[in-house]
Length: 272
Ligand SMILES: O=C(O)C(=O)[C@@H](O)CO
Ligand SMILES: [Mg+2]
Image (cartoon, rainbow, N blue to C red):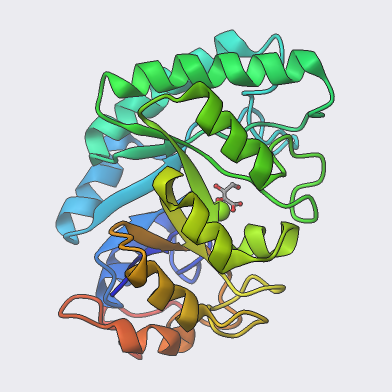
């Protein structure tokens, strides 16, 4: 049975960021992920994880100037020094949180630009080496161009070939079912073929990026398929609730174990 991690960037937005940990735990989650922790101190994040018995399964390396439209630095020639500083920053959060996988965003660049391709490969090789010393996997995630226009890594085939070509033991694919369906479809066959390369999976409905099992895909079939394939990691719930987070957790009910048990109201009180 898949285990699910609440994505605290998208879910539980009824609470301030640091209070989302308790809200997710109260809702039955045993793990969390988010895009970026960097507005908070590492020990503040670690404290919320420990206090709520949560496992941190993923976050992203610093993406450059996010508010200014940047979506990662890896494919941007001339930004390598900044990327290296960002990796050091992320490692201090990794140490505090115990996370075992970090996502390196590629940035906005053309894959027809050889300098961008070379920069991307260099950034991956260097970052993977740094992370390997700490026993951490480096993830790359193909992202669809409708949500992120101009994103460099917008193709699963390119990502698959690159992971195979570089053959770095800790370089893995972040398979976001939402992006896969929008870009290429054929989700189940892709999971079957790519499973040996996959380091993390994320889910959301297509096309609205809401709760699983509310869109064009049969997400329960996909979860069963993950079991059939022996996927032992967490599935990140990277979706925007269509209404209040707690009101949209009925899709989780079939997968409820002792901890993974959605509740209909927040013990600590929703703000809305
Ligand atoms: O957008 C996604 O999908 C992600 O997983 C993020 O980490 C990147 O924005
Ligand atoms: Mg994703």
